[in-house]
Image 1 (cartoon, rainbow, N blue to C red):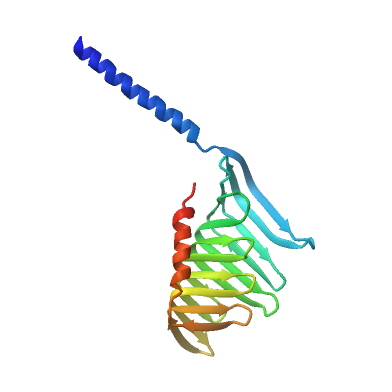
Image 2 (image 1 turned 180 degrees about the vertical axis):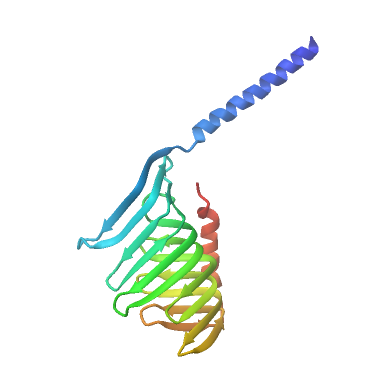
Length: 222
């Protein structure tokens, strides 16, 4: 009889624990608030011209206001250039299009309409600050122009001003007039407006650390 009472007591405690956990899981569960397929979102400025246009294969907005996007394609317009950004997936932590976290196979094309200069950027993920037209990452990147290929770790690209800073471990290979030239440095700044590069010996560690902190605290949000 004593063994039976002991077994009953343990079973009751375990069952109570399971019920509490299940209740907490229900309270803390994240559910889908809305879902869209093959969607398009457009923002226009005061002149009724495009600021940006976002397309995607699927959009899920959860009850905590986090939005997940599959196959996002973002086009950013300004007076002198058009920037196209795409990736496999993206996360918008607030659903307000203030910051977008682009994941896997991030591909950025910036085309200067005045000079007809096209720049392609590749990385594994990046953060895009919509209002600032700013793209940042602390991962390895590759930049390709008509006559060069540049690799490095981390970058901060202002799409509005056309300035791209590669933060560290930079190597640029130029192929021009059948001549190959290699330039290496700890930091490089590239101006997409005039296709000019500046090489620095000191890495942009402060910017890179700031981006890494942002990624660690926010990027894996679900």
